[in-house]
Every structure is written in structure tokens, then in C-alpha cells.
Image (cartoon, rainbow over all chains, first blue to last red; front, side, top):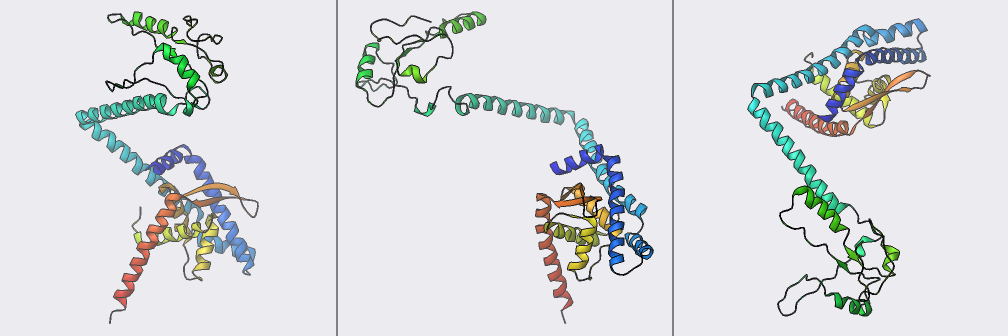
Length: 228
Length: 108
């Protein structure tokens, strides 16, 4: 179907050029045949006449080739016109078809955009596969994915041997309910700036801040990282 | 289109087969058909070129103008992937057809 479409477009655009090329193609054929006939022992005149006779008339053949191309162009043209006519005859069906296409294309675009952000795009850090997040859990209640206690971090940092570097962060407070859209948007961008991340000297080698400024390493308990 | 289905069918098959051996121009194709059939088959030139262009419109072959042996530009035809599949399918159905014909004709 697709190859036919390409051939159709090519045939439509290059109609005149192809006519000229067919003439050249047939002239080439007559020359080659003449040459071959001479090699078989004919005189040049004889050879040329035989070659032309075998071709069955250059003009006739050229017309036949043009006919073949026109039949194809016409049949494709008819298919197109038939499709348009059928759609116009049943506008409800046409509408459903168009809306379906629009929804499906829109939907898959949306899904791909989401997947692209979540799955395909690499995190802006070197070797993102080695980034992990540490959580706490409650032995008694069995609750998982609890935030860690601030006071526990220095112990983890001192004792853990599996990590190249560690850094704690404080998530931004959730936006207040009831905010108007523009205000909550402004709020969110303001609160994003307040993600506090203490720095560890080794972290600073591999992580760079995407926005805002980074700060010199400070022991976690001593001085709270100032909001930036 | 004139109704010469069988003849057109066989000529198309012959062209696809010759082009499966390598790109060639019209004259080369007709020459090869003559050679390989040991002069038993001769593609009438008046039907060869329409057949070539028909195959191109169907997407089974593609063509480009290329310089040839005697310093002239020739239209050189190349088999496409669709053409290769078509060749396989047509070869099979032709062999089935020939076998069936032979079976009928040899019945005594």
C-alpha cells in the first residue's frame, strides 16, 4: 500500500520527465540491439531495421508504457475518490472514524510523553543506575517507606560501607489546599527552591545542582542547611 | 488493460527472476531471458517495457537512470524487497500450475 502510494506520488510529480526517460530508454534498447545484430554479422542498416522491427515500433511501445502508468494512476485516483465519497455519504461514520483516530493518536502521544519522562530519559547524573533512595521502616507496625529521622543520618553516613556518598534531603511541604491555580503554581515553584540538601564532599564530585546554588559541605547536625 | 493474464503473468515472473540475479536494464533483461531459455523464450519488446513499468508501479522493482557500458544513460531496474516476496510466491504458484498441467496432459 505504502509502496503504491510512493509510486503514485512519483508518477504524478514526474509524469513528463518519465515520458522523456522512456524515449531515452527505448533508444538505448535499439542501439544495444543494433550493436548485437552487427556482431551477429548483419550490415549496420540491416541491424538497425531488425532492432526496430523487434521492438515493434518505438512510438507504439512508448504509448503502451504511458498507458500502463496512466491505468495505475487512474485506479489509485478512483480509490481515493471512492473513499472520500463513501465518507461523505455517511458523515456519522466519518465523524466517529476521525474522532477515534484523534483520540487514539492523542492518547498514545500522551502515554509516550509520560513514559519518556519516567522511563526513557536518563537522569541528569552520571551512572543513574547506581542512585538509590534510603527509607526507614517500622519493625512493630510493619510500615515501610517511612522518612528517616534526621538524627539517624549521621550514624548511617558513618557506618554504611555500601555507598560512595550519601546526602539527606527535606521534601517541600505540600501546597495548602484551596489555593487558586496560579497561586499554587507560584507556591510550588517557590517551595521547590526550598528542597534542602546537605552536601557531602564526595557527593559534590558527581552531583551538580540543576537549579539554585550548591553550598560547601556542612556536618548535618551542626548547622541546618539554609533554604536556597 | 488488455486481458492477457497468463502471458503477462509469466513475463512478470521472468523479469523478477532475472532481476533477482542483479540489477539490469531492459535490453539486458530481454537478452538474459533469451539466453537462459536457450532461445526458447523471447520476450516481445513491445510487452517487455510496459511490463517493467507496471512492475515498478506495483513497487516490485525500482529504477534509476544510470550510465551504462556504451556511455549512454540507461534505465537500470533493481528488485525491491516486495518484489523478492512476489518472486517467491509466483515461483511457487507457477510450479504448482506446471505440475498440474503435466499431470493432466500425461493421463492416458
